[in-house]
Length: 309
Ligand code: HSE
Image 1 (cartoon, protein in one colour):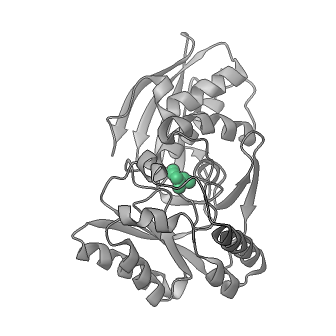
Image 2 (tube, rainbow, N blue to C red):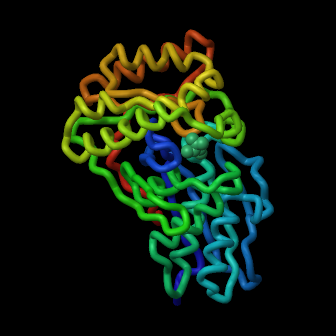
């Protein structure tokens, strides 16, 4: 008899990775959401429970990131049954760590395991995008793709997305610091200007190209030189108390780069293993100056994506 129920873990993520606004992200496997999908006779998606570090999310499936994503999966696969979802949140709301994406990804990975003919990962990505759009008001993939595929991921295109896992040089680790405060993605997207100076466009394009090239060629100098967001970060940094000194402190400790994780308020940096703990401590100490408590991690960037548990 085929399975009636499946549970998936989907990791948190950092997206944007500084220079790749809405297109480049990496998985953060120390945190994640856990979604259990169960077959129901009734068609459509129902949300039976939401628990964990967030519990006041919409239970109307069309308004819930996991619910909407699994609706998209059922629309695509038409399996002839419905799905009930129990969502366990491990990622704080409004943290900039891809919580809405993880719920969407966890939902589709769990539900996919129940389908007679499971969808491809790329199809799951497309379904999960619909869930992400419910939360942020926009279709973007920089959290969904790394949460689903793992590691550092570039996604090109929205209607027909192409996903590329980018190698990360050996010895490079990520520092992720979450200040315990809430910042709504919609708000952090709302402050962004609709137009970009030509000189900034050229600079940012060069940085993205340099960053990706540096990753493929193990060129740490090129990564360090390119690791600067000259468009988005400066528009958002005032939303995060202590961001500028935290970034400066991270760079003073030898970070390859440091920027806002997604829409914020979390901050991330890349550093060589030997410097990573000092970079984490430097960032956390600057939030302490602001009187903000933090959770901080040093993680491997090359981590697995969502999986059945
Ligand atoms: N790339 C998105 C942003 C992530 O920076 O607005 C937010 O979830």
